[in-house]
Length: 260
Image (cartoon, rainbow, N blue to C red; front, side):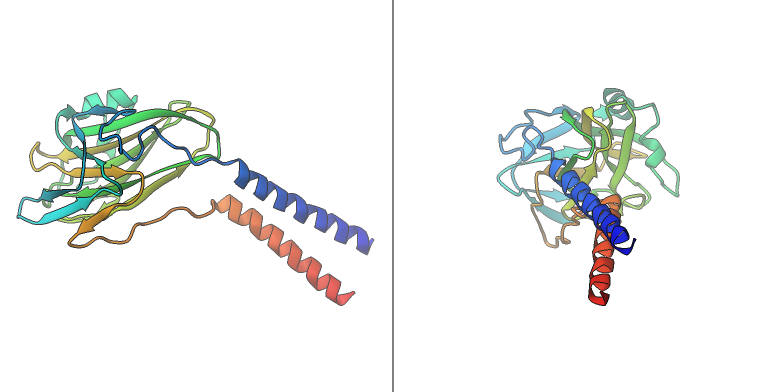
């Protein structure tokens, strides 16, 4: 009976280990068309408003603060929050009216006015992941908020909306004339089928002093200061739990072997 229990435990550990390895092996990191913008264009993407490919460039805020943003390679995408109405951006992405403004948490009140967006479709399987590097600069000041977003539209049409940064709201709150530094946006996908990924930057309360959002395949550079990128390339909680079960089981087997 003792040997049977040990055998069953060993089988469970082996199964958990195989499941963890199989899940890791089958997951794919999605590569988007022209993800690094090294074509020098926005080919592969659809843009709304003021969106363009640019080499390293500088952004001057309302008070004369200058942030210099560098591409990882030779080119990156820049979105300035003008040229497209919020309702037209939401309609293009299949979002319900007011979806973006619901994340504009401005304690002094306010409403999103206009912005810019870039998006593209891709196919993926459940368990695949996707990511981009981004950098946000606020030309404006408190009490304006000007949030930027990353959005995933799932195959079933449900959206996943994340605030990347804002002046004093959700995401990284950079403050007046602030700058996030290059950060990493990453998502593990939970459905199989046709997706859409989008990035949006907006104005709040007015249509001047646009926020700026930069996109690249990996983090670029920035001056005079650039916080280190935030990486989210860690195992999913379920994977960590499964690996923990396997390791715990191996520990039990090792102790029983020593006692035998």
